[in-house]
Each structure stands twice: as C-alpha cells, then as structure tokens.
Image (tube, rainbow, N blue to C red):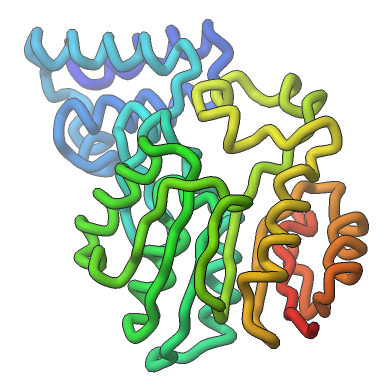
Length: 280
C-alpha cells in the first residue's frame, strides 16, 4: 500500500468510530510512523509502506479509534513555546492554560527575581514555561500524584532548569512553604454532572485533574484559602476557572482578602483565567 491508500484506510476506521478529526489524525499518525512531517507526507502520497510501518500505523489507528488522545499516543504535547512529555498520569496541556503564562509575563520582566508556586503542576508545563521565560526567578511545584511529579521532574531536566524548580509530592492543604510572589494553578473545576458529560477522550486523562466535588469548586476553595497564607502582601494569585464559575470565584476571592485585577477570556470568549492580588 502507498501512503494515500493507507490514509484512506485510517480515515475510514476513525470515521466509523466517530472521531471528528479523523483526517487530520490519520495524517499525523502516518507522518509519525514515516518519521517525516505532515507536510512532507502530503507531497509524497505515492510512497510505498513496508509491512512493519503499515502494521505500526494500523496499531496506532486502533488506539485512536478507542478515543485515546493523540498526545498520549505520541507521549508529547506542545505548550507555550515548548514541548513536554505527557502520559495518562497528567492532564494534557491545553491552549487556554497558556493564558496563565502570558499574564505572568505581562506582570514581570526578563530580569525579575520572583518566587513562584505552581499548585497541581501535572506535567510541569506552567511553571517550566514561566521559569524558562524568567530565568532569574525560582519556582516550587506541588502535586498529589507521585507519578505526575516524576514526569514534571523529567520535563524540567529536559529543559535544563531542574536546579530552578523544587518539586514536592504533597496535597496543597498539607503544604507549609515560604511566602511567594506568585501562585499559579490550573486546578480541577468540573462538577460530578459535567464530568459525566465530557468527551470520551477526556476519560483517558486522570479524573483527579478534573473532578472537584458536587459544585466544581472544592479545589478552588482550597487553592484560595491556602494562597491567602502562602502569598506575600500584594502577591498575585493567577488561576484557571470553569466556564460558569466567575461570579462565585470572585466572591470567594473578595471574602478572603483578594482584589480582582483582571478576568481573561479564552478563544471562545469564556471567562477562563482570574488575576487577583492579596491585599490583606
């Protein structure tokens, strides 16, 4: 079979299994097997595949047909300007989370010497991206999952900044640390009902990275209460929220001594990231 025929096979299988991005996914998977870019693949569609490559492609298509995310199949995901190793022990980094990094960079300059705390670090993509951009600063990253912490450590090593970030396997409510200039987080914020309605591919990701009690606010409440103690006066708390949580979260912040600086919308104009300052 040549590449064109192989792609047609992949498209058919993925389409039958209701994968909306069946064409793109087939192209990405075949390009990965061929060890070339997607663009190179599309201009060499008559190239023949040997039996080993064809079998490898068929196995990858089978995995994707069961809704396994492409990021887990490739074991990597791009976030901000960088690549990160990912597996099913961590949340797959998403574009809307890049807003956190973007807002931190607006509030600091290249030579800023700040202390950052990342709560629920997962792959480490937020804290690593920040410290890569602000190399005179240092960071601490927490996660309750030992496997997530190990992966984040690997990512920090890959980006040559392990000496700048301390990784701690602990729940935020048990953590006793220094006073920080910035706390950043993408906490779980999905309630039980919403979780059951999520797309099938999300079920491959760790449920603890999504689920936050009956109201979706249990982890955000913990985050705010703990940040109240861990931040310096005038320190910034910057974190992601659910699509219908803005008013409730603003009230929680105000009750706990935070001033709301800014609400950032995602690409769909949904309030997604809150920037707040500890004022007392």
